[in-house]
Length: 243
Image (cartoon, rainbow, N blue to C red):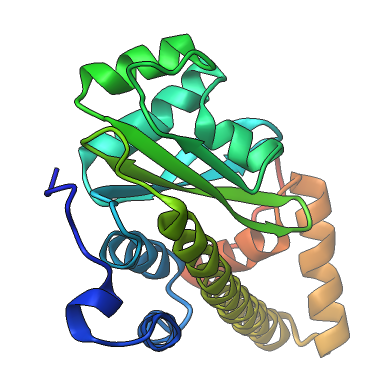
């Protein structure tokens, strides 16, 4: 871990908090649809921005209530975020499901999540601060800040952290939206190529070629894009069994 006496980006540079958050948002936008890059950028920026933070991790909810780490500044937050998911207890989970902010001033003396806090204390964590990162449809996440010393986070940390989490959520939503758009365009291009192969090979119309792809997808119980990918990659259209 780095020192728990870190200053905020605004204190280091003389910028106001609003200026710092605006700069962070611009930096995250440079990832241009790279969701993983945006997640990593958020964790690094959180440590630089929130007073007292030494390390940061981001967790996502997958498959209903299964919580998994998605980004981290070191192995420590990755391990502790994963531990909370394994144990089914911890401040990260409370932030995701029940509270927008969960503060743990003294890990060693905390009694709410005994199994998790024992593990965190054994790894040298003194205090934690967790924020609900975003809520969009069924998508949930948490931004988890770790500090070596007890009492590292104060009221300013909570205020700055909430503002940071709100800015980060907007940047992350934008990256995911752009990534989905790109994936959709890639899939359309792939299906278009597969249609072209069938039209030329079997002298079909565009509608007939698309119908053939759809029927093959249904018969083989495979996604349409996977059928199209196989055709464009191998030149063959499978007509039997799939997953």
